[in-house]
Length: 101
Image 1 (cartoon, rainbow, N blue to C red):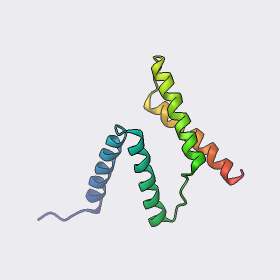
Image 2: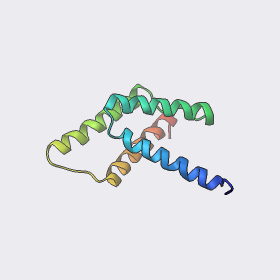
Image 3: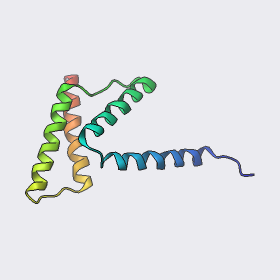
Image 4: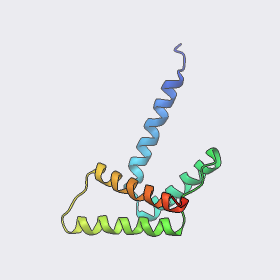
């Protein structure tokens, strides 16, 4: 019998989470928004992290999606790293603005 390792359990959980997140990216926008809200609620419940979702955030996310869609329609493309950097930069600036920094 092999002992169960915590590391093995965590690795398996990480793989499952990565897999579902990859699939979420293929879902319709409404379903993605619902997933974001659900995960944010879980995070707040278990870790006490305050949600960053509000109407302003939703508007900014919709505007970012629109910008990406227009660029793709014109034949542009973004790498995953470019999208991640853009979202992180905009979200960081937005969060600093909320905190008055």
